[in-house]
Length: 411
Image (cartoon, rainbow, N blue to C red):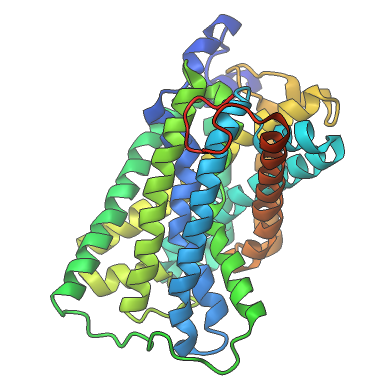
């Protein structure tokens, strides 16, 4: 009975020589490995506004320079991780870079923080997806924990079936979400340019009493939640088809461009439309409602936003097991993380990720705002250590093109 249920949920066992078929094309890789980063535009701007609103609505104009600062950091990260891909084509991202250039102890700090980040990614994506649902249907608000847990269970089973199968399913909602956000950006921009925006935007550039450097830095760090998942491509290079480094680098650039445009546009629309954060409705929901009204386009945007946030956790399911495998191979995690399951994925890592992210949802009661501050561990620590490691590598080894980080084929 148990075996039949397992076969129904996971599928038939695969042979080892079928592993090549599990490699990803750029189109599918963008869906699997970028869904977390792209979906974060649904809550990145909101996290900035939640910090600023504590001083008052007049302080919301600070979200614009803060958003541009986040965009600048995104540009630096994309260029740097592109170099990481060519320098370390076996994957591993911040863990491998830090271990190779800064020592084993520093590498373990980077690897550990990334593992924490991936667990948080699943929890935050699930809770944020639930927020999108409850914004459109407030009656479900009291059931948000159960909804988030069902999301995690579904994703765990989906990934146990294999990365290629999950990628095929993921492609459509990811690209639908990108289409929906650009539809919102174009619609919102058109309404603004034609003078149909009736909301009062906070006066730009006016000093606000109570604003401190610490508060602005806190808003910036909260906004950097939009950058989580950027490193996933450099972590999962072995999942790409040949030539893996080149395909990974192209995918990373495409993701960075799309993410940057969507994030800064949502921030600008929130400012222009005078949007302030609400406990029972997301910022994206408020913008969509102001631009299109509560009609079919609004519900389409909310539906695909909820779906992409739900599926964004798949980025972590693709990267966490591979990183856990590398740590296990280096004897820093139990050997069980090196074992491939029936569908040739690292199933123990997938199950571990699902269980611990579900525990986070229960402890935080499904509240996204309670989880975001924990992102500081997984966002800034590996980013900082990875960039420091690459700088040391450039300075000490001085490979061809080391002064021009956009040059292709870095070795």
